[in-house]
Length: 246
Ligand code: BTN
Image (tube, rainbow, N blue to C red; front, side, top):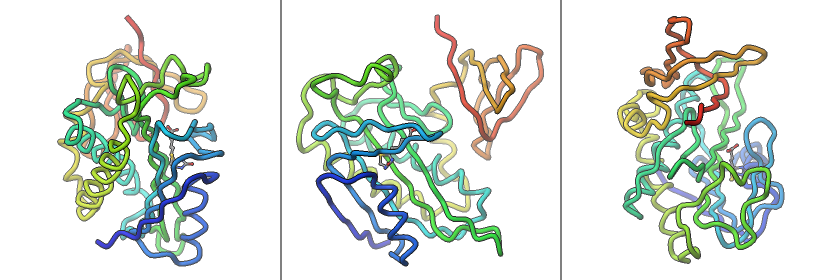
């Protein structure tokens, strides 16, 4: 698939700008990379810290032929692509905290936000914008206080300049290779082998409800499998996970 690369120094949010391009008919394969973001967006309306010099912030425009339901696979495929790319370039072993955070040494080093326009006529998608933010190094001033306990970076020391381009190129290339098979779950074995949560005790929140249990694995649909403290086995397709420490 051809990739149409746009590189910018500072933007508000690569997702926001690429969504506007999607509405105006930009082709699938358009990729917008920025050196920094002033209004980087995270999941659940959170801010995503995107300072210059230490991270990679980019968004990919997709026009997938899949149902809105299968669009979960875009995000999970992206998490696999990020892990495999980091492994290939650095030799490190990142893991996926369901559903799409990438962790290294127990710290979050990458967040992924997919935003999509649903075609309600046929239940498919008009477009999806896949946004990926990777912390390559720790900012000089450190991470902001509110995320300091969970945020990490691929490298401890200063950010090797060429690493940003090598890792982003590897992620984009790996993602589009996997994306060819989006309808299937060909990525799932790799997703499972990178699972950070399997075997861990967690609290799972879904709306007002919370559940405690142990993660037993990932289903073929990329749902989180949990054995609740009550003994019941549940498969969750959405929700938030908190890991029990110690
Ligand atoms: C999360 O962890 O909550 C998701 C973070 C996603 C951040 C990326 S950075 C590139 C793209 N542009 C954005 O505004 N957000 C995504």
